[in-house]
Image (tube, rainbow, N blue to C red; front, side, top):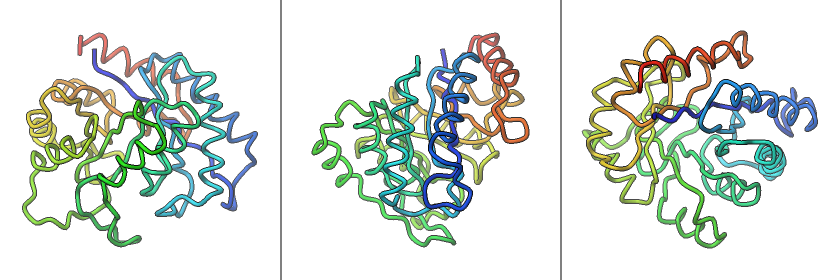
Length: 254
């Protein structure tokens, strides 16, 4: 059975003009959790997606807020919970996960040297991250690492998906995530095939653009998917869409 990880995109957090207060943030996150679980997902991933513009490194107010809300989600969840502090702060994600009881993190940048126009060159230091992980006794928290992630430009000319996958796993990733070029765009099937071949027994996830219309095409070449946008109607998670997607996955014996 392929794993479907549903996204919980938090409302704007502390410090952002549209922050509605923590009670409202938590209430909405728990509502999203309930819908995703009722729809049958295997896990959920909590992100501060609506914090625009994202901070490259999470400020103390973001870490504090995410720790609180992820902790509340973990208390209610019947499925594993993951966390990602955007834009590029896997240490913060690990700390939040460790305190809140989350089971995994996602990090967009792990081994690939990449640059985003709005933010510059992203810091990558997997060895430092693993040292930190050990320091805070977060050994049980798994790391899902994106390779050649969406929205960013790869600075290592000629580097293949296979090379990125092998490098990420060797550096300590517990699984890799393959995306298209932007949110809502699915990865190329050949990229998934290449990543899965290189990963061997390590899981490979689709990280963007997965939907009911392409499920049968994508899932044979991966171990699961992280899905958010295609489960929404007018910006809100839609139970009907969640159930339809899970039915498509299960009905196809994928």
